[in-house]
Amino acid sequence: KVCCLGLTSLLALPVDQIGGEALGRVFRAALDLLVAYKDQVAEAAKEEEAEDDDDMDGFQTDDDEDDGSDKEMGVDAEDEDEADSMRLQKLAAQAKAFRTNDDDDEDDSDDDFSDDEELQSPIDEVDPFIFFVDIVKAMQASDPLRLQNLTQTLDFHYQALANGVAQHAEQRRAEIEKEQMEKASAAAAPPS
Image 1: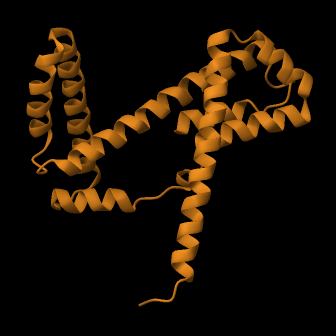
Image 2: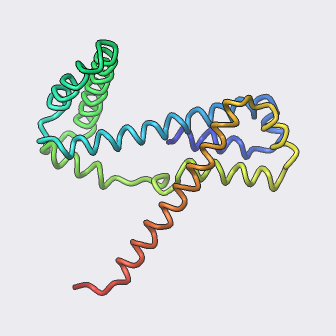
């Protein structure tokens, strides 16, 4: 998310600070990162849903369930899933080691998990897709010729990615507005 926001911020730089060729590279890299971030968020949501369905035994339970279904799909899918599973286990171990080095006290893992949920940063409220679309709209308003030249240099793949990001941004904007309205109505409702 930080990389997405950082690269997107570079798009707003004036012409004298970022040339046309560099702008094109940054634009394409930002699109690639946004798509990867979208996939990562979707995968994390699926994993969170799967964890909610499990008995909270950890990664081993997930691996056992995945192995049974993968055998029906074939060896290639099983190998890919095992590699993904190993990568996730390594990342989880690294995250756990980082947390233990970061916190010297010996808390229960449930306490660590709930502490992580409570951590907030200023960028939590910034949606990278909406931010990207807003920057592109600002570019269009301030220098339409520059944006037109940029979009003309994009191949079909990146034009499709840009359209997909724009559509996703509008969906996210609607979801966020709905969440804000629900929070406002819940806050305005008298306590029972």
